Length: 244
Image 1 (cartoon, rainbow, N blue to C red):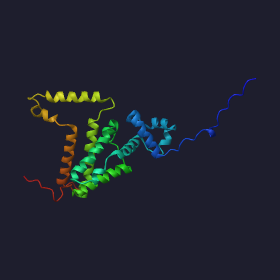
Image 2 (cartoon, one colour; image 1 turned 180 degrees about the vertical axis):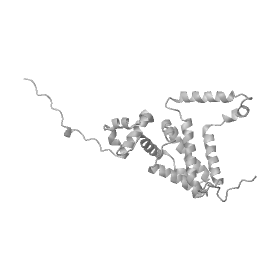
Image 3 (cartoon, rainbow, N blue to C red; image 1 turned 60 degrees about the vertical axis):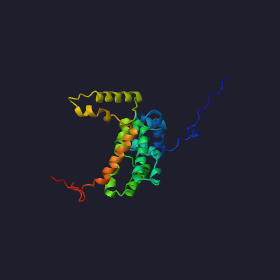
Image 4 (cartoon, one colour; image 1 turned 30 degrees about the horizontal axis):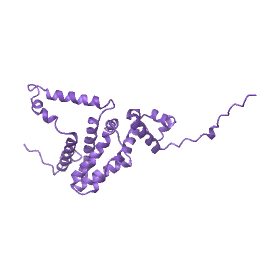
């Protein structure tokens, strides 16, 4: 007498999948990026990870660009905003916040490059912008000027991280590219490129951290001394007029 075949469990007896939420989708995307890199964070790959169809994700995230922006916003929770609440020169505290933002991007090379065009709009991004505006206000920067300064400061930080962070091909490839550039600068012909030949050492000098710090201070001091043009593009009244 043969035994009865084992019955398959009813679908009703299987554990139900967690309901999809935007927060859950973003959290899964962040984990996927850490494990496989940003290039693998696509709607199709994310749907596989969540055991659902790509169409289900579009209810919560419009496209891959918005997904990457949401991932960036989540990681902005790692930016240290505490210097804004400590004592000391407001410029130095502003630079420390911006440096922390740059460091977060350095940890994720693919995200640093994506951040050049990503448009995060979550609470963590707003927290960062609010902190930067508060520090600029503390330094006496007019509000209209501070509003434009945010773009300059974050673009410089983001571009620096995107340029210097090791690519997904690995740090060895990136170091090889920099070595080739350094060799070209040092070998510049004094006849064809006299200024490069004269300043080759200076062009390559200084650790990245020091150059980043200096760049932030250049931008901050420039914001302090450069009024915004009016809506027509003319110089503001307190700008120094051109004189022949």
